[in-house]
Image (tube, rainbow, N blue to C red; front, side):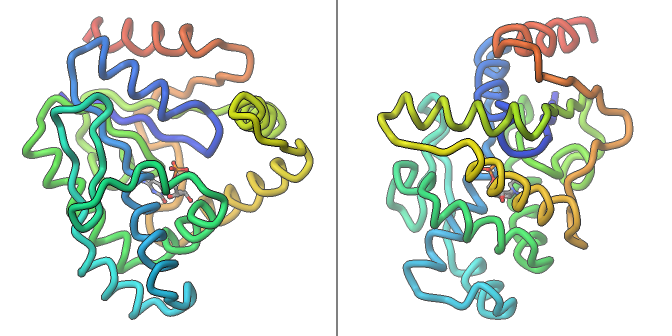
Length: 219
Ligand code: DC
C-alpha cells in the first residue's frame, strides 16, 4: 500500500510521514532529501543553478541510495552519508531551484517510482507524490497551514537547535519557496485529485498523525 503526503514547506509533513510510517510498519520515503542531495552536489561542483543541462547531467551522475535498515532511512549520496549536510540554508535554496528543472524532476520521479516497486508498503512525502509519482496511491493526503504558522514552527525549531531566527525573514523565505513550488511547469505543488486536505494550523503533530493513521486503517 502506498500512502502519499504532500504539502508546502513547514507543514510538518516529514515528521508526520515518518511517524505514520512507524505506526503502520511501513517504509518512509523523504523525496525532498533527494532534491536536497542534488542541490548539495551542485554546490560542491559549483554548478550554475540556472543551467538546466548541467543540472540534468549532474542528476544522472548522482548516485542516491537509502539504507532501509535504519529509522528513518539513511540517505547516501555517492556512497557517503549526507543527512547532516542537507538542511543548511544554502542547500535548501539550491534544492528549491533545482526542483524547477523538468529533466531533473523526471529522473528523480523515475527513481521514486522504482523505490515504490521495491518497497510496496510506503509512506512517501513531498510535493508531487500523489499527483505525479504515485497517482494510483491507495490514500493521498495534503497537509497545509497558514504561511505565518509555518514560519513560526520553523523559527521554534531553529531556536530549539540554539540558532537565532527572525520570523519575518523565515516567512519571506517560505513565501519565496511556495512561489517556486506552486508555479513551476513540472510537478507543481497541488492537492492531488482524491486527496484528503488537512489544515494543520491548529492541530498538534500527534493529532495529525492520529487522523492519518485512523483513515488509513479504515480502508
Ligand atoms: O520537503 P523539503 O523542504 O525537504 O524539499 C526540498 C526542496 O525540494 C523544496 O524546494 C521542494 C522540492 N521538492 C519537490 O519539488 N518535490 C518533491 N517531491 C520534494 C521536494
